[in-house]
Image (cartoon, rainbow, N blue to C red; front, top):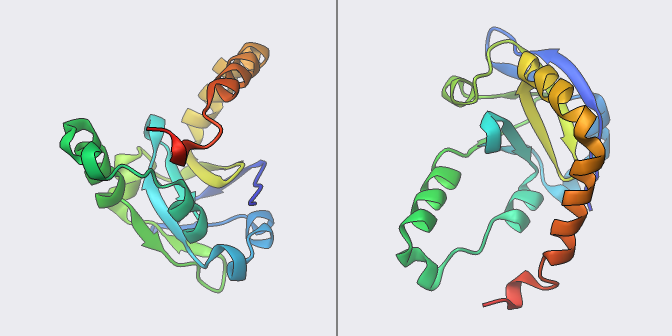
Length: 160
């Protein structure tokens, strides 16, 4: 299982390239996780980078009868329609489409954050504000996360 942690500060260059931190590149085994990333406009206006393996594994199984639900169809359209596959060049950079950066409110200075199984790319000011706002709530957030984890079904594939 992929395990990414830490925060790094970089800048998007003039050609919309982002350098993936060396610590992350060293942790990700292309033979196991695939090469490149899927760049996904994620929650809270943050850009998520998933390895090919992780992206396939985390993709929700919203098929069959669920396709009759408009919210499911719309989520799938946005999730997959706005996702871009990006390759890592020999210098460890990925070219993020400008429209994707714009949708996430990212211009130049970014925080690149390891969040267990994926990388999040934040506008640096937005990340700093998030940390300032939420760090004092760490204990309460941990308790809520643990409660949510206990409520999660053991085998989501077997749940109707």
